[in-house]
Amino acid sequence: MQPQSGNPVGRADPRLFGESPGALPSRRILSNVRLRVLFGAGVEPADFTDDALGRALVKLQEADSRARFAELSRAMITEWDLPPTTEAHADTSTLTLYEKYPGADALEPPEEDESSPDPSQLPPPAVARPAYGHNKDGHQDCKQLVVGNVARPDGIPIQVDVNDGNFDDTVWSHRTLRELPGLLQAPARILFVADCKAIHQKTLDLLYEEDVWFVSRLPNTFKVGQTVKLRAIDAADWTALGTLANEPKSATYQVWETVETIHDHAVRLIVVKSSALVKKARAQVLVHQADLGARWDREAKHLHRMFFHCEADAQKAWIQ
Image (cartoon, rainbow, N blue to C red; front, side):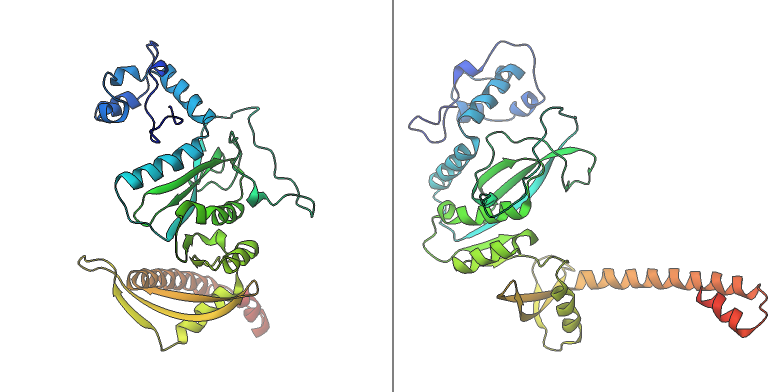
């Protein structure tokens, strides 16, 4: 790519296309893509050999792919004349790697102390390294990379970064929040939509310090979450929201809210009740009741065949 040219989107460098007979499955996909629009005239799917794509990826990495992607996104938003937004959705995913990648493992995060730099203020690594971590695809036996994505509410990504496979989502959320004003260039108050890793002492402090609205999910590790849910069950002042989709038999929603203190900050908590989940929960209760009843029947039949010398022995067997 040529990101230094006047066109922020860039054009293909003809020197990237070699004569190697090797090819990747992407060539079949490219046969349905309007290559003339992306790369100009004279570029065909057959030009995308493995050597050509490999050299292109190396050049892209050397040119800071994270910055180039943000540049491309801004150019696209300008080209389509999309309205500015004050809202950003941020989340991470894992890229599962099925090879061993010996000698390329990420380093273990150092122990933090007062002299250590804040990891959320450090940029993503120039080259992300594979490592074992919490794999969101369920492949705990595989190494991975952690991919972060920040998107507008219309789904257009405005920043993507690739991190070491053992990178902490909590640190990523905090780092993303620091960069958000520059990404959105929003003239008004920002709304930050993130996963439960955003509910962390440092991130909450920064949210309130910068006066940023946020929507997230309270982690199950917070005891206050279970307490609030139990209070909501007995509450009578639920607010009906109706349906969120114009489809037959769409789920209906109700909400109940309160304010609790989390990490020294007053946080508005909202409990959501879904009719679809209520039906699912009732079905699970019926299944659990049936399983419990069958177990009690088996236990009763087993005890009925036993002989006890006294009432105390019978009670002991019943308890066991």
